[in-house]
Length: 528
Image (cartoon, rainbow, N blue to C red; front, side, top):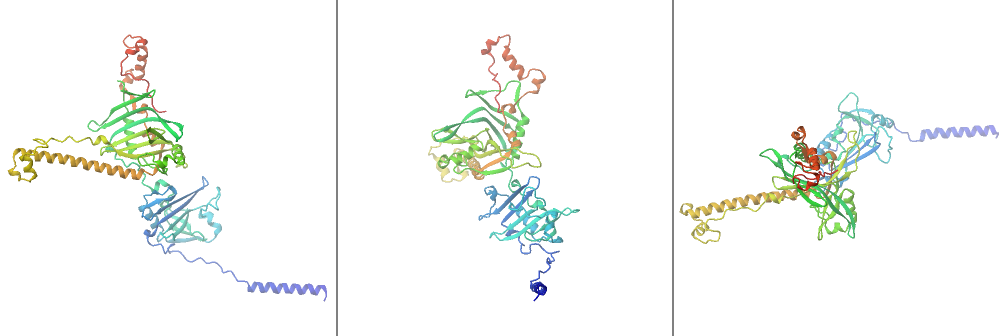
């Protein structure tokens, strides 16, 4: 056989092989997506009460950052935020709204079945393993599970359909089809503060009766038991709201010089800053939670350090890093104090809040394009003992220990018309005393219950508040005390008095300063 014939034979065999392969290889069917228009995207998800977990992933193209958020219902039926140490979430209504928006979510149209179009419609899945900082066209991933962990709905929400207000491109993860639906992405926020009860103190400002400002700093020293703090006090002030006169009244003003407590008074040209105090009271009612962190183990709701805390260096470092320090109170007692002082707020019902201010908290990123500064805060509640002084009961006529006929008649429940005047008076006094005692006991019980409930809520957490609210509540002496407008107009302000103090008054020389009026304190020492 010639070489030419051999070559033609091999070519013929190859052609036959190709023909056989073509006709015998399984054909790939053209993919035809199901006709979903008008149908529900999640037919098996029908009851919002089945939703027990919601996970949201959001990618910020501006920051190149992926944010993941989760809210879940625990075995006790309480909604918590796992990503924030299971802080309680105010999510009952919000979860219902979020779940309802996915139930019976109807498809309005099919945009594309091509994977290459996903970036155009903004429905690329926000997967941390696959994304890079420059990725574009990433959607919002929403995933709902039931109490068994079974998926009820998974959806990627993309760009809004041009020319509409409430229609968006969406797709199911793992599927190429991009649909058009009517949905509100705002139902799925990833901001912590949008899933909680943000009102931290829940104070009615009309109930604020007294405010005590304690301005101090902490100096730390190293001891055998670990780092300890020593308080360096600057000033204290207590003011009361006089509701009859609708004004703030200064109860006490104390300055500290050389470690000594120096009670002092306002100069004739000074007065309380009504504006600053009113702003403080308003800020207490408006104080919002920006973030939370779980408190170290072993620290009680009253900020007393337990034995397990005292031996835990990691817990102590956790405190110090946030501006809170163990301060020795004498003996074996220690308490937590703050780097930036504290404010005590007493209410009409006998509940007193103690706010202790720590250091600046790390920023979670800009809000509305603007960097926001936040600060750590410890909150506790306690009973204001001054609201429950010993009762002044009216003595019984005839004496408490007199076993006379009047006492016997009362004890035997003698009819009132048969009782003597003495018996009647003793009965009246006894009932009035009992009424006063019952009223006091009821108020005390209510206040103690409120304190216990508040501390149960505050006990486990460092709170983070905005720096703006901190500045409104944490007043220095220079914030609290201002120069009277009339003094400034007459040219006899604080500076003038200070000048007179230096030059001598009524012809006295400077070396006669020992006889200067006692109302002239030294320079104010406010916090920096």
